[in-house]
Length: 265
Image (cartoon, rainbow, N blue to C red; front, side, top):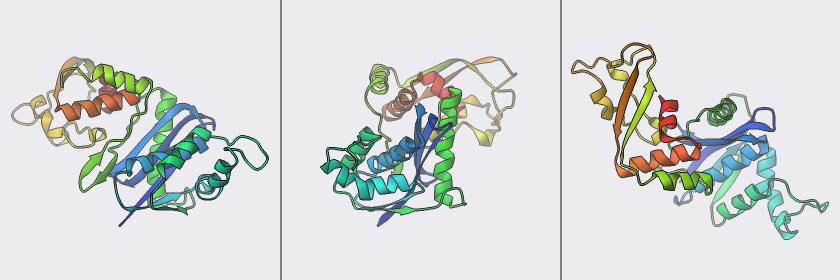
């Protein structure tokens, strides 16, 4: 079988706040970004994370990409660059070297092909990836957490998007030993109350856990949220796996778990 996915990047200002995303369907996608990067870096990162997310799947991979630079880099130029010590024909060093080396490792032994698609012309997969990449860039521009997506789903099981080393990994390790019961104090609820059929659904955690929030409503299903500006304590009970996933997503955004949950709500 063949996995078909679009990969795209976005940079506001180029360079500037930037995002990346890959997209298979609404239940299988991922996104991320940086405070400062280029569009090409976003495009390369999207492809890299797509290969990483599907590394455990023994299927062909069709990558839809609107960047000729990325396609040519991976399929035409990279072999020659490696032979020259990662230098171009004029002897100058290759740009975005770290990302290209990581892609070179990620594609080893994989069955894949790239297909160029024209961007911003209504191609559904490309548009979906572009929307998420731009959303991530705008989130970094505003200093807000951006949805990371559910990751890759095969047969209904989501694979975790990777959390890179460094600060994010350190944060995850330091928080990971806490109790699976998380309490968000000082959470300010919005004036508009949620109806009983619109209970919180943290899709960004990789699955719908809305049913776990029934305790926030009264027996008739009406919202327990009261006046605007009133402070509430919300307790969320998670399994160890769900808790670790939440911690990783917060760490990947360099925010606390509480700040991450606020962003989702």
